[in-house]
Image (tube, rainbow, N blue to C red; front, side):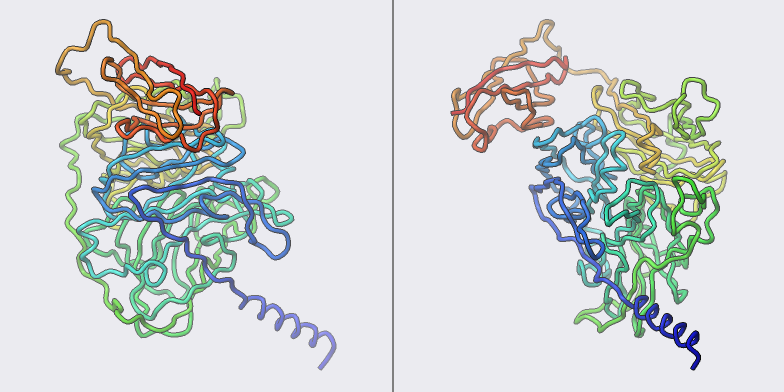
Length: 565
């Protein structure tokens, strides 16, 4: 054999060996309730051989535990921020009070505990939680902050579906990262595919029907999902719940923030196949299809087909699901005739907008995000049609807080079956018009708004975001005091382990409570505090502290001090 041929063969052998080297897919731990403790912290993770990668995570070193909830449960979150920076935690897709939502207004300073709580009213589906700090969402997502939420309900729980978490019911968090010297570079696109925090990920699936709960957690990239062997898969749930029946597909385009649950029938199969991103078919106007060499958006995965997960087929479990169900549930969707308000939201490029002089490229309703500007006042009980009109050259995954919606039309046509269920993210393509309908049934709050925005974190950080408040204009029963007595007392004072708030002789209604130390640092943030059981102060250092309570009606802040022995 000639020397050149020998070297070529050797290179092919080495490449082939490298191509077959995979890393085990990591499955996030689960966390049960009703109280859920999450601690955000700066940490490290071995992502690439060599130096460890600086990361951030909830309760670990990448991503957070999967929170397991049941519809109608009351959940209490205890979120501790041990990062060096402020953060927020948004419960993406949840229907809950705005004060508990974790958007840009609910900022958690370093070394502060935030305790939101609410009753779970969402349908069974896959949701997630993630940071939502304005102008830093991309950086904190890039570092690894995020986690999944799985909700079960009485309808989903009796269906013949895979439900063994980590065995035949597999969470898949799809994202990508750019690395320099093993460290993550904050960038809209990465050069490496990362699945559940793992590069070149592989998992052994049982030879039966398996369920994939897929989240696009990328900063900007969409993924055109399919399988290397051309297998048909079945969409059973969108962002906010089960579809009426499984929808057979060979491709599904998922955009940032969006979730989809699919079934894949591996019964009778052996060997392996790959979950692929068929992104070579995406146009330049969709994130991941754009290819801009020499720009900040350049990346090695641009406009390419690439593997996201190597799937080895193993033995069946002891009680396998081996067939795809024909029906799932019977949804009652919102009817357009019940809508009383239609709103138009514009998605556009900022070029030519006189008051925008910075680098921003995309805007909603012709303006950048403003903390002090509410685009809409939505009356409680409204059923509304929102018309999303894009004149942008790029596609934007539009996300709204507070509600799940039904898509009425895309460019005048009914949505495809896989998009006809409950949604909270919809990819609005370039020059497209999307209409959806939603009901704003409760949780009026004149102080804390809900957000709507592009879920490309870069666009969101740059100001492609707006907000609305839900207001109650109905007749108020009862007569509020003309001169309310806004006061409270703390007992015992001094105290050692627990303090109690006395409102018995006051008109004060606690909207928000903060506990502040002598240096002005916020220790506890308690939205709509549950005061009956008192406040645990056993972990506080001795000294003087103050309690700040915001009154629900007047929004006045009342301050009282106490001493910790």
